[in-house]
Length: 311
Image 1 (cartoon, rainbow, N blue to C red):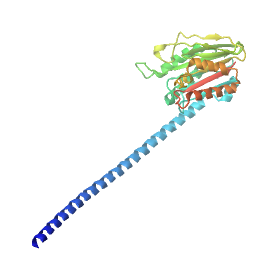
Image 2 (cartoon, rainbow, N blue to C red; image 1 turned 30 degrees about the horizontal axis):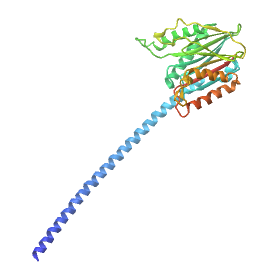
Image 3 (tube, one colour; image 1 turned 90 degrees about the vertical axis):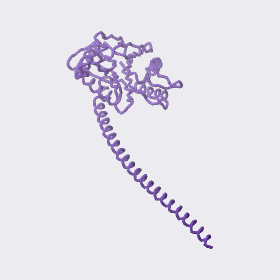
């Protein structure tokens, strides 16, 4: 009886010891769990704080971009004022981002009409910053000097832009610049002159019903390594109802189609040949539809600007 009693007591003690070990283990696990929960709560609070900080930064950034958009929109001549210069025209303008590095420019004096498409280095805010500078310089040039031909304006633009971009640089290796197609029409003689850099101008001959490419110069404006003093203006003979098309490279460089390749100049020229006889208001719509079909679900890779002027 005493032996059985001793065994029972030992077993009870072992059982109690096991319970104690389990309780201690559970207590340790509970403490670890509480520490983990507290850590995660603190981490979540820190993440929420960081999230709010990022949202505040993003909001300030978007406010700046919206402000830049407002400035750029006011800089561009509104359509009703363009109609006062060229009654029959279209502008297909599709920035990649909220603001654009491409822009169009018009100016009319007592004798001359000027129009241009400009493609600045980059897109988005950096490109938009360049558009404001260049627009201002172009306006200053044509207001200071009357009767300039396109190449004279571009040489002047190159000098002023280069000096502006490098005024705080001793090395003078700024890579910012632009490509441009610029045309002028003398309203007294009805002569059209043009000059372009790294862009082609397209002339639709209404009588022959064909599109002719007008080649540009192999220069970029505003970069020291490519001074543009050898630029020249060319005279273009045209008939009434001919079309002049200016374009940045965004449309041509857009990837799409079955083989995911660039639209390319050949297709662009063929498209212009197709739409040139359409009513001017429809031409921009066709350009947009063709681009969307070509692009499919792919992202737009660059700012897009195409201008058409009926002469």
